[in-house]
Length: 483
Image 1: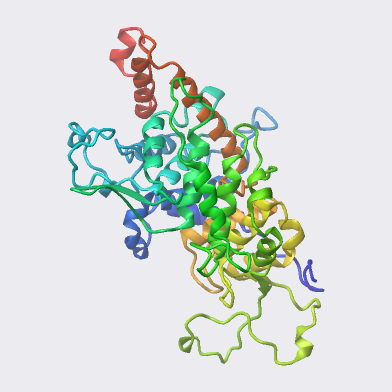
Image 2: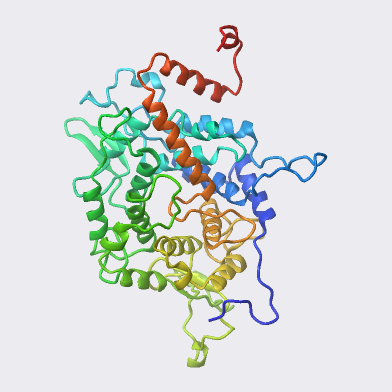
């Protein structure tokens, strides 16, 4: 099948400069009015923007001569400091992070609240949610500049209440092993786990656990009881469907997004804590999946030849734009050089969508078989020819305007495929590989500080360091006392 451009046609290219212009506008200018409905998801929007800029950012190296100045960073140190302060301001005293500033209550409202005891409930006490917590941790790691030293990288998670967040995460797990999105105290009924049954929550729980928990043993400072990983694994494995895919349960329709979340969640359970690539010999995946051939076949089948719709098609009469038309004759089924674009869908008989290039290909990458099952050339051409927008970013469908969600996923899958000129992306943690290394260092810093808890002056030093980091300068009174 055609893996190169048709004769006489050149391969499309990723317009890095135009994409950077688009993402920098998203960072520094008000977003269009269509994002007003995403007020509760500001943490997610920030992740899409900062992650995309990070993927597009070239490594900052020393200039060849002393006369040549370094190129300025795409995100200034002041912008990084202010965004870090913004992220930490969304941390909930009971654990986790809120998705937007409008859901953050003043801290004094929680002064009498005991989150470990069965204290009287307070309205709004469950405003942290599991997705915002993942995005917040990813952002804190993404906001560390490439040129920061080891000590700064270890402080990426400084200010995160690791113990309380992990305890809150454990409370989000249901008896059947699944995870919910939010935790609320209902008067007379105890804790209520909301958010429905969604495989994305399982993936997020595994990712947060990998980033924060570490290998602290019981009895050591900073030890937190783990959630039920056995029940968690069984819940996910029970959700494989008869045709090999994954859904909310074995009786539901499989979905590529759920398949990615199931595979990634299981791989993160036994992923090494240090120096760990996205692809590792996961015993849980190797042994636990009931039918690996059926799973890989189902994922590979989400790939199809993209055909342009005829000009006479009335799209208003269709629920979705058609892009996998039936051929007019059997001759059109021949697999020749005319078939230049391969797209992906999330379910059988659905249309192509940029984000499914990520969900399908990244899932196969985590299983170690993307190269064998994905037509990389035609898939790349589909993204760059059909989905890349002239102003930068990627749209949902061919011809759609760019948006933050699909724009980020388009870049991420190109980063997994090894696109030149952008950073390699970790297919399990959905950030550049360099950022994963910072996460490892940041966890190391959290655990080191946990080991120092209880030593004289440790808490005071921690608060001084955090205050200095957020303020950006050493205040005069601190200099006067020699600190």
